[in-house]
Image (cartoon, rainbow, N blue to C red; front, side, top):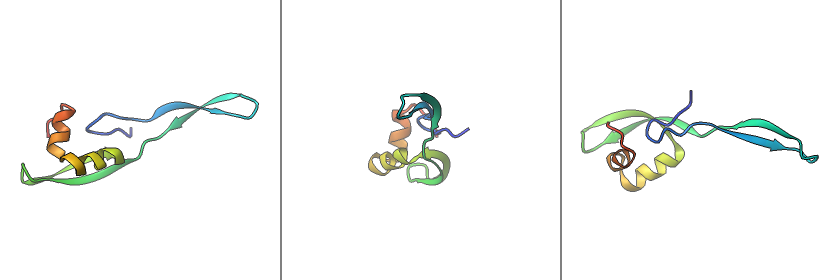
Length: 74
């Protein structure tokens, strides 16, 4: 199952709505990337499945701070 290791985000159930307003179920998949990320505080790489939004936040505040914010132990 595609799921972010940090935030736990996974696919969402959505609806297709036709011109005649008939609704059918569909999945909204999230963009999961398998990444090997360097953690300078630990001095090693960590392999994680993260969303692209997670990657942007990690670039901004750092992996250890983002993991602590989401109560994840690396």
